[in-house]
Length: 427
Ligand code: 4AD
Ligand code: MG
Image (cartoon, rainbow, N blue to C red):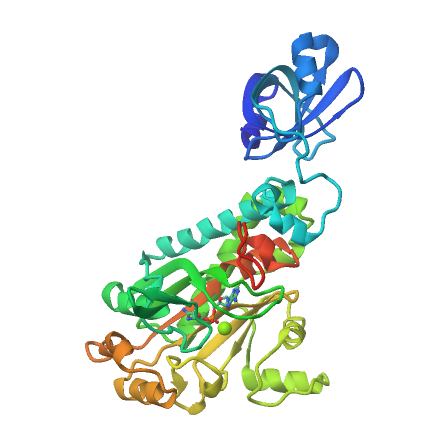
């Protein structure tokens, strides 16, 4: 493959791929070849190939598929460092003329309509390769640390975050929902396995049209028995630092292609700074924002706070009234919870939400009642507090926001193969 081409300098290889682009200057044709693993320039010199091969290349439409045979040689001018001196071309499928995505500037809506083709281009390809690396890095981090992967259901009988942003479905005549989070089920699994994580798609019927919101996104959600608020933050900073380091090692070429400033990423290592919600409110007021204790942060607030630091920052001890029913209130001050959001640098916003969970049966029942949540459907969750309940904690990291931050790209819709947003369920 192109990715491994450096091992074949001076040798004849056959690549199976597609014609990404082409230019010719009479006696030489330059083929931009992609094979899924990368991009390489193929050089077809008229006097060195048969007439049939030269003619075939000259007339080949963009995105035709082929097997190309040639010699690998160094080319200092290319990002890859190598090019292919073409000898043979065997066309697999001659593409139709009029490939919709040309190299000229297209609007993003147009490109999103052609996402199935847009994902073939170098920038989109690089983003999704980095996404894969982050995916693997996260799984590896938890696997190495002894966590067990459990899959929560996607169809649930109740809201798992206690909010109303749910996609409702008809489950054989009963109401059910697409899950917003796997957390409650991960809590059950943590009482069976100690340390677990789920990693799956989650669904929110939010009518937000921002750079940070998707209606379907992926979340990794660890849950740990006998771990408190402090221990929870420690796992988070270690996990984020581990993943960044891995991407810097394995996907440097993709980061460079995206123009990412890697020096900013190289600074990410534990510990991360922490401020309380109350301190953050003071910080905002001092900076001239109109903001009251109890207000939720908007994008400008998050960005202002994040800009005070070079690393991600934990905002801890949010008002209890602002957060989900399952969060453990601070015994020293029940007005605030033992939880934190992690805010990424450079304006990428909240990437993690997490907390210690309520493990006391009476307190949980009180909270469910106070929030008017139907006890019947949470019965199984309540039972976890009856049989060997222990302090436990967990969090959820949004994969797409993490990809956006690490790649340094401005919109979340490019971080997932096929985005689902307020105005889009196609393709
Ligand atoms: O803060 P959230 O809502 O937390 C939970 O769902 C918890 N149950 C997680 C847990 O403790 N197990 O969401 C967690 C993260 C956010 O920090 C953000 O990164 C991402 O999920 N997220 C979204 N990403 C894209 N589009 C959206 N609409 C998102 N909503 C949340
Ligand atoms: Mg949150």
